[in-house]
Length: 570
Image (cartoon, rainbow, N blue to C red):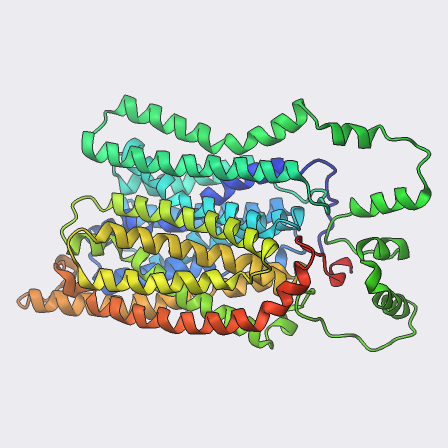
């Protein structure tokens, strides 16, 4: 377990720093920006390129090791390992694309991409687990914000790539090698366990709304400047100025801790200057509420202060177990803290995994091939497609967290119902892609981006609500394996093979497919039809999961707010 003592300061400084870390963690979304250079400079076929995309996704989502170590290492050390992975992995890719080193074997590039994008797993785990523990009563909102900024990172990198780096893949890879580790070294001090609030606070809700609004404004701003640069070809001075405004918008969440420092709330001042003659029981309860969520509680008063009066029998059982009167260990129930080996044998665990795998696995196939999809249908500048997908991905992640949080508190509606709705929309989007009707490319990309984002922001709090926060890092990262598994099956094997086969039909005289491009809707039509069938299956499974876990949400949110489970106390 963590030995670092939780700080007494509010956790908003860590959340503001986590925004920057999550943008850095989105480095795996940059693959479409430099994939064309891998193909042209190194002479790879489309199938070889899509397998590099699979390496990109495997590295990004293989977080089992950071998932285990996040309970043993302080967050700053987890982020430091992520920064080192970024430096080493992207450094090798830069050496190859810049031709500083010539003749690097394909397998070296494959491993280097795995290492480079594995930094995302370390960075994402470090900030997500820490901040969800710092805000245990607002899991959906926090997950939506952090996952949203990670989804928006592709638009941030696109603005950097087109406006500052002049569409240079080599310069982008050099920034990922040196610039990102520098940013992470500056941010890692501020991401740390802090005192969680165990009471609903209206001011906290306002702070979350401010963070969400600032994120939406940033997303709209990035989309606008990307389109303007494409239409008007803005000069360097203007682009540098616009990029500076983007940096200021990224700093917006820092306004919350600054305001809390300069203008502390009256509630906090009263609490700090309260009468010293309060009863011992009250003081003891207050101290208990300031304990970190992950700390163990050995005091009888501490246990009872978290529980409702109707849990008296459970308190007695806990006391009996503590005194050795009861030897048999009770298995956790849904909503309590599960160990990984206890969660992995549950049907709900595998249903959630399959729903997530089918949703994001199909979506990442489009993301990895977005540049080639655009070229196939005659789009000149595919960076606009990536920026649009990134913005809509952000909206989906942010909106999925906020909307699911609202309905789970007001209607006790299980979060996976939103995975059901979005997978139905994804079926429609894939059919639009397959039809290749004029004017539908941007609309279908936007729809897919929103739905893809919702899958992330709903899966994260759902996993924590079903299986607890104590071992959440490992459980969450196992769920993330659905992304690279989908990339391998649907992108690396299916999409890459279909694309190269169609390219061979169009260019029968060419022996080397690395020099040919497939043009027309047939390049990906079969792939899109298969993905539509995949999401149809995902829709069915998510309905089953929603029905199964509805009693859990009725228990956890019976009073209109999250009720901390007993097992979080140990």
